[in-house]
Amino acid sequence: MITLGIESSCDETAAAILENGTRILSSIVASQIEVHSPYGGVVPELASRKHIEAIAPVVDEAIQSAGIRAPMLDGVAVTQGPGLVGSLLVGFSFAKAFAYAMDIPWIGVNHLEGHINSVFLTRTPPAFPFIALLASGGHTAIYHVTSHTTSTLMGQTRDDAAGEAFDKVSKMLDLGYPGGKIISDMARKGDPKKIFFKRAYLDKNKFDFSFSGLKTGVRRYIEKNLRHLNREVPDIAAGFQASVVDVLSFKLFAAAEKMDCRHVAVVGGVAANSSLRKKIETTAKRKGMTVHIPPLSLCGDNAAMIAAAGYHHLVQGQTSHLDSDVYSRIKS
Image 1 (cartoon, one colour):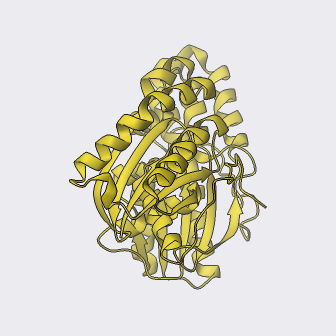
Image 2: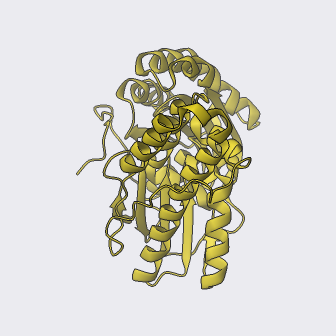
Image 3: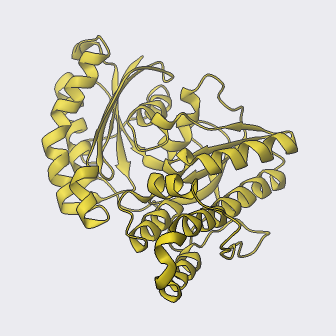
């Protein structure tokens, strides 16, 4: 089965072609970083406009790069939510029209389910069940995953997502956007032990997150140390990153031990963070667990993961209808 995946939940317009849900024939991502960088974050109206400009060319490029023709497609999978409604509508509407014109089935996919399925696009996917830490700009959550299409939410952020915290701290330090890579690169030049920021574990027996207090702690430190700020930026970045990494890692392995799972996965944009990857891999080895993290190209928003998730719904005969709509938040 050859599936076209389409992703437009935030500020990336992406399309991918997958064969049988695992083999990537093509994966194209049009980034909007240059558009949003001057504002220090994503501007929804601008994002929607750029999606409109990019969607058709990106899909065409994905089909051509895969070495196929449109009539060879067997189905379409598209992000339905959560995300920015204006951005979602562009990809979702395009997918509806494309599938209708080609007379092929289509399915709206939960963006978070897509991230979880990104680990199945690797050479060594995890066995079920496993615990997944999903950390991105908009979401930070832990799931007990029992199949490609079923998972149970164990905990999530009560305020800022991890990726959002990276962006905001980067903005406080006047380093630019997006903050994830910038903070990671800056932290390599600093000492994570020199400036200590509290770890927001909340209840160590539960799996929710909170990064707003950490963000406030960084802001207060900056305000109190403006005179020496320039030379302390690498240490601030390192100390902040260490706090986030410690909490994410602790909660992931605590969830795995509670559910007696020997397999863990880390997905989402923050999974690209080298310090987090190293911490998870080292801890997993010590605990005798297997760890699964997608390559960098599949950590951020992409359409291959959407096609992977959608494939498993389509082969079960599940489809969406023309009156289906997008959603900005996870349905309760």
